[in-house]
Length: 188
Image 1 (cartoon, rainbow, N blue to C red):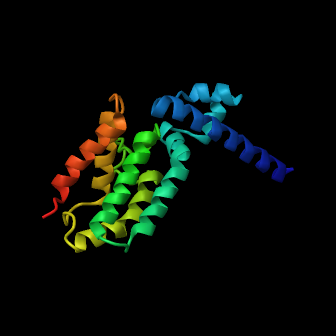
Image 2: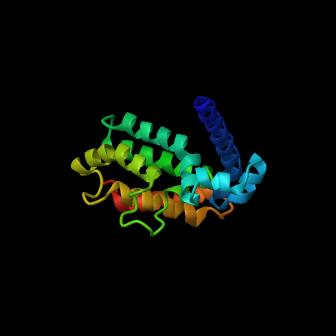
Image 3: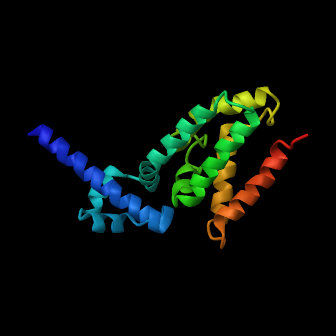
């Protein structure tokens, strides 16, 4: 009987998560937990039991995308020009964050933690995966020695949040990112 309940609970979670993904895709990081509950056909307490905070919901919705970005950082580590590899990965993070509503909010520092990457599984996963990529670029003098992955994710999040209501958010975000990159590590 307990195994059946666990299977039911897993199916219930998967269904709520699927509804949440659709709501976040449509409405962004401000998607209503109550609307998710209504569409999923469950009570709002059930949604809140699975996702006690909005950040928990956004992290769960973004988990697969974050895992793909982390995998990509590991693939790029040690390949080709270290600066180009880092910038390729950062551009992919920017592209994901611009096109996937709610991702920037999941990555954003919300002021409740001492460090932005602490207690934030999305940012922590990116931090762990990208650290070797950034370290290699810094060791080769391709980026500022004091740049951190947290700095770079914060830069991406800021750009995405600042451009999300622009008529062409992807183009504007890319333009601002290129300006920041030029300032971060201009080519000699």
